[in-house]
Image 1 (cartoon, rainbow, N blue to C red):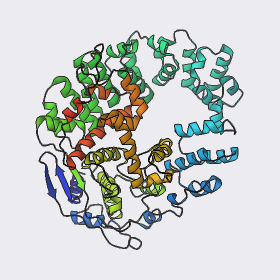
Image 2 (image 1 turned 90 degrees about the vertical axis):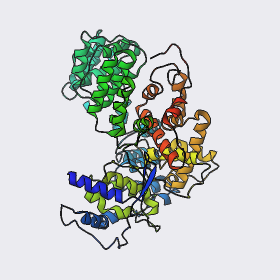
Image 3 (image 1 turned 180 degrees about the vertical axis):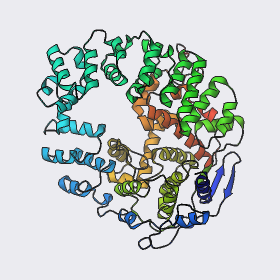
Image 4 (image 1 turned 60 degrees about the horizontal axis):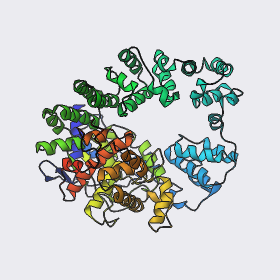
Length: 619
């Protein structure tokens, strides 16, 4: 395995045109890989041996893809050619017979949202859904006002008394959505629910019994972590403030050992809360040893603010040990430095191969050369059309589910030529990262000349966000239906288009790189007028401007008078995704600015976020 890792590391490095070493600030030039010009429809190479020499690796890399791969390269119904379709024609073109997944779910949402449908049509589309997100739930709820809904949605909206007249499956769905009702529900109905669900839903029935008692704020510790979570979420804010345990350390460690995400989510939210509640005091009285890295890390932040620095250090050490992801390992190491001021932790961060704000900070603070590698250019790519439709999300979904659905570097290397085109630079960078298992950092600048940038700084920020959103892949659709390179939410497409003076933009147009980059730039410029700082712009881009406005209005973050700022505030952003997103975009911004000729000091940039004062908050 070491041989293969070294082999493919060497192969992937030799594949790059230029590698910028940000410590030495020099460019190293390597012989570019020349794309194979063989006929993709005729050749089907095979790997002769499981043991590959470097020569054979190169042969594999220039080998062609299989006939199976070619079958998914183009769709008989390209998505960008059906914008005019409505109703049943839209269904037949975009949904019927298409593979399941997020792409089909998006088109089902669009079909449900934009057409007047009857119950039969709604149910036909609903049965094809792979997953349900808030966009779909909102649309279905609206449709439910005029048409009969699929059974599970009907049961979700059903009161418990009505659900008791239905089968047990429907009753269980109704109960899960109305657990708080059991604090006041009559004994007759409660006992009927318990009787019917005791065998199929034992955790639910035990939670119901606890909720029916007067001492529910203490008896919730008597069961497992799933039951605890169900009871906890059914309690009011006042009840949560009264939760007590006779032995917090024992109870919390026992519940944590169940390894349930719902319980860890509760611990995370308590640790992030600035109010010193009974639950927070319980955390400070405990020493939790078994939890995921992020929970352990936030417990360290909680100790640092309200408890013991020694315990905080121990939590950060545990968090590091629990993760195998470079970003989270580096984050835990960095906080050990912040607490101890021991530069050995910066030296450790200097060895990181991952570009992030922690490894960047260490290199700048020590004024030493970092170990991470940044690749900015891929080889001389072919200018002719790539062998697949880059604007069709179904095609990219099929490619990722077939030819890229492996972690075997030999199999991945075999398809490199398939992406060796100027228009598929992002897909090629994505592939190369899989081959070298993310040991190298690709900061590419694709779509040259497609957009006229007003400044290098504008391009840096747009690219920093695009890299984090999609790695520049134009047909990406997120689980929440964010679209394209810049991951624009569907609700924003029409308003943004109108503000841009465009009346011709439909959802499918967001899979065109130029349209997506221009709309993303438009949104970023809006945010810059209010927030200015790239970190705040990133938070608002991901979490929404309203979210950031409400968060900053509390005057609890980015304070001038608090220790560990602004690093502490960056860890206290309430949305987890947004928290990490801001850190990653800021690191991207520093790298892209350097690529475009401007050196930025991370510590100085971060100091510019300290805009608020609140003498009442010192921790």
